[in-house]
Amino acid sequence: MIRKVLVIGGGTMGRGIAQTAAAAECEVLLCEINSALAGKAVSTIATSLQRAAEKGKFDAARIPAVLARIRVTDRLAEGTESDLAIEAIIENLPAKQALFKDLAQRLSPQTLLASNTSSLRIADIFSDVQGPGRVLGIHFFNPVPAMPLVELVRGPATSDATLADGREWVERLGKTAVLVADTPGFIVNRLLIPYLNEAALALQEGIASAEDIDTAMRLGAGHPMGPLALADLIGLDVVVEILETRARVSGNPHLGPCRLLKEKVARGELGRKTGHGFYKS
Ligand code: CAA
Image (tube, helix red, strand yellow):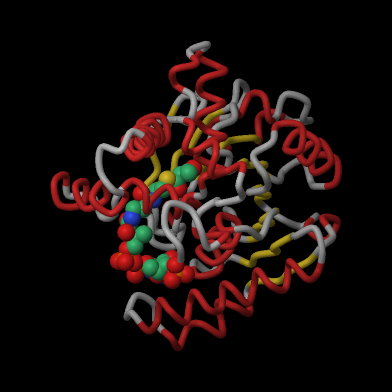
């Protein structure tokens, strides 16, 4: 059973995974590239839990115990006791491959190795890792504490036991798991991200304002938020990365990002994380 979890990467997704795992009684070690970033990740988690408590979504009395279960480090070597190591670092294949090659040597052969990738293939990420039976994709959605779905993805040699352990952990976190083939974007992003691109294209072509596009999809299709606000939440760089991967792998350039998305990313307008995307936040 997975009880000790090493989370590598303290960005939006890594923080959300750490918070959710600690809330489900797991001992979490959150690893960032330096101690300043690691410390910042935990203070952001504390603020997020406080906000959730104020909205009545989380019991405020539990916050100190949840935070106490999250330790931070800038040294991967401290995670050798983990039952599961899950990464949420930059969406870059060589970076993820190098990380797992290193982790596979440091950690016990029993430690499960998981990637939270949103667009890369599990087979590629773990292509050179010792013990390919223990690897899998565990893909969470943003904001992690609030989104009830997780996609589980098998690599070419993932064992049944690894998949069962991964599924059991995800369910203990209060999430529902779906099993998806190892294709770029899996299922949610394959359907969702082209829709966000189309919304950006509609804005680029002057079909409606950003506000009216979002209102249209909230009120006309019952979505909890409009596509441009959602793209800001996900991060426009992440959206562009997923679209570019899909276009490259499919060999269909029409599946790539529209000009407006690319321009915004080039200007550093990445959405909520930079305070400016389709909206200012
Ligand atoms: N425990 C702890 N925190 C919780 C919580 C819980 N049980 N439930 C919610 N929260 C937190 C959230 O994490 C969030 O924290 P911050 O304040 O730090 O942002 C906050 O409470 C808001 O959540 P609420 O549920 O209160 O907010 P809401 O009712 O206004 O709904 C929303 C907001 C969940 C974002 C909703 O608008 C929504 O579902 N939007 C669609 C989101 C979506 O589609 N996400 C998928 C994106 S695709 C992706 O992530 C995959 C990828 O690879 C790119």
